[in-house]
Length: 230
Image (cartoon, rainbow, N blue to C red):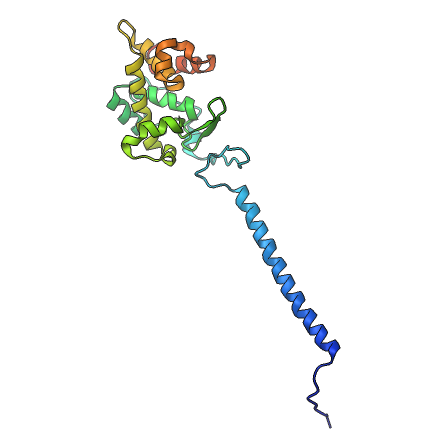
């Protein structure tokens, strides 16, 4: 015969139960803390894609190798006519806005290739200016805000290739209107127009091609050749 009692647990038993409950709680709390720390680490390693991808401390995430933007880099603007053909990324946009502002579309496309390698997510820190440039056309924030305001574009819109090409064409049109002087050839005007894109139209008007460094002058010569000026 089994004797059943209602005796209360001993002090030792109660102590074991208390310690078990506390230990379970501690383990759960430690597990939650570990998950939180892991989430923080992963968040720091995967920055918001609206932040410049090569910002200090950011993880650089290259485009996929099958992306057509990368695939076309080996053959940038190499056509015979004034229009950009369909082998070039965003060719319809370059053609549309080049004709709109009366600038050869392939000049726009070639210059964009020099600025960003046709990567709409490109970003670069301009240390001498203390500013970032971004997008297909590599606009500085101050210049972008000035010229994109008419369209209601935000700074984040500089990453949008359609918007970047539109504003790029507008700014080159303005640069051309500033640097052009009577007696200059079309090639001279186009060269200073591109220098103005880099150094500022006013500076290019005063200093000419000396307003930009040798690397930029080489890009200008290459762009003029592709556009049929030379």
